[in-house]
Length: 111
Length: 111
Image (cartoon, rainbow over all chains, first blue to last red; front, side, top):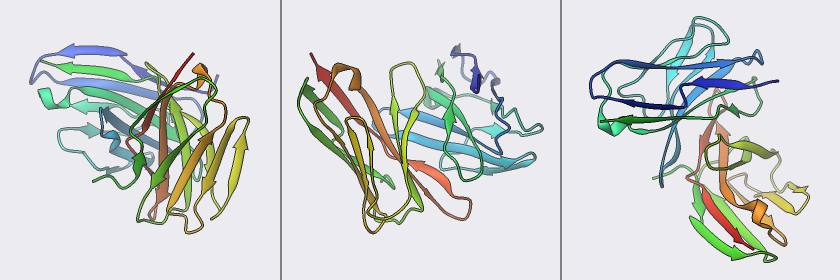
């Protein structure tokens, strides 16, 4: 089944403790993105990647890092999480010129 | 301010009613997509419109892309409780044709 898999689904952590949210797609898509979704603000792009080793900032990149060492994986790293990064995070992938397929989301709470 | 403004933000109607939601921008998009998101899941693509003035129908859902490719509407005929969800529009623009999302319209259809 074609899908985007992100883990974990739920995560509660403390301020300053580094964490990684993993994302993997099995559709051989070139583009991958990370979004955060907050009430009233919709989906805001954090980082995106157009291919292996090619990443760029989205609209809200501060406090986040990404890497794209393999085509299928696009992990999101929070080096020092803060409470304002409490949000619902989505990973998505798409082919060039196509539409995004989204993962099921990761609900992150930073206390 | 959002690149894409969706209205209304919330809509609660009775089963059988018709409704229209809007997605507006001052920017031109090469294509525009509508997604539906249910609680606990990622957005799922409903339709992509590409040509100015284009109209697409998906059963009881009718999508229209504005002539100037800056806005779009989604009309639902005889809404059903299964239509309940968050409707998101997303526009493609820029050199990499990546997607920017609106904040969404949260629709509730009561039986």
